Image (cartoon, rainbow over all chains, first blue to last red; front, side, top):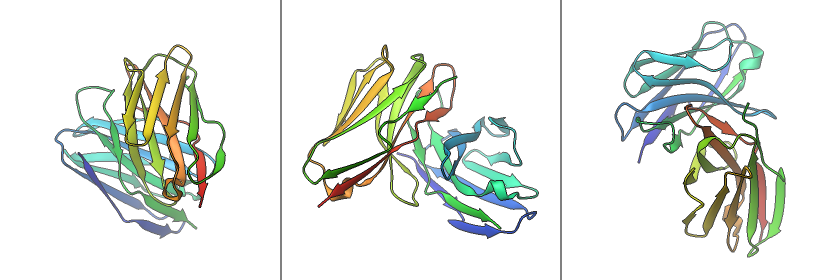
Length: 114
Length: 112
């Protein structure tokens, strides 16, 4: 099965500062990769997904961006954080080859913007 | 637009009782349905995946059923234990898409 690593585990950042969250995947090649955000009282929301290196799809307009510089590396970034960016960010992975494959999640990064 | 609902939002049962968790979705054109467990402050752990062509899946004390035509899935946990206390989330993947649409979750407390 797939193992997903995320870091950092927790992060406290001031408004207006940049952000970089990293996710790496083991146990599969050419996975589909996803970034989700879980905000208090709002459930889990898909932010970005990627089916290959350099291929990023954005689900909602926002202050964030994503990049996939290597096959099993997925990065979530922001140039200037907003208070509303606070939340629990989860990276997920599934096998390539179709949308019906099981998704596996990483341990998450808790981001607090002050 | 696909909407996924989980009712109740919270549930408390005594140890040993069977748990029944409900999930409903509005669009029956799905590829699969996945049940997850989330402990406080942690990521999601996949429990069961049901393909759209399946009616149910079982793993140990867990059994999940799927009725696409009525837009419902049920997760049964037999003989609940305090360690089963967590939030349980269901999510569906719509045909021709890659994203999971999640329900709001059911927070379960199993009292010793």
